[in-house]
Each structure stands twice: as C-alpha cells, then as structure tokens.
Image (tube, rainbow, N blue to C red; front, side, top):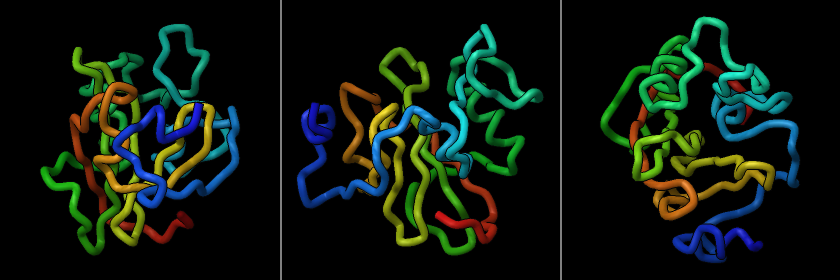
Length: 146
C-alpha cells in the first residue's frame, strides 16, 4: 500500500523516501541512531531492548529507556539548536506505536515499520496508523550522521 494511503496527512510534496524497505531495523532503533537490529520491548526477548530498561510497551517505559541515553522530557517539537529530539507516538489507548527523530533541518525522519525511512513534517504521520504524538524528548546534540 502506498505511504500516502497509510498516512493520509502526507501529501506527495510533504515527504521524501530516504532509504529502501528493510526488515533489519525499526523506528525505535532508527530513533536511537541504529540500523542493524529491531528494537521492541516484547516480553519474550525477541526484539533488542537495553538491559537496564523495563520490557513494557508503555509510553513511560519508552521514556525511561530514552532517559537512559540522556534524553529528557520536553514540551516543544520545535527545532532547538544544540539538541536532538525524538517524538514518541501512541495509540488512543496509550500504547506506543512509533518513534520519529528530528533532523538538523527541523524536519523529522521515521522508519515506517518494515517499509522505507522517510523525511517528513511531524504531524504528517499522525492518524489511524500511529496515533498522535504522546511525548517529545530531547538531549544535548552529539555529532552523529543522520
């Protein structure tokens, strides 16, 4: 199914595909600057999850996990010089569904499950598939390739 059918808030000119489809990693890994393993706190330990983090599929557990990497909760998704940001999405029942990472140009990058990575505006992927942004987090920037 085409990306803009899954995410109807995206228009053809509002996003760009930045990588081919792959099952090697997901949005959580991508938010953590990794592209070689699938991250998820499943109770069976199938997906990678940091040892120090709780294996719960809750926004609070995702927040605690990213706090262990130096992120802190913040209110604004706006670009702030000197900070990297992530946005944790959640379904209407509060279960995390996706994480997007902000790029240095103020736009966002997302790994869409097993599909491609895209560059987009944050509200473009809100809706039925991923729900809404539940939490924004930031940490002091380090020089990593985006």
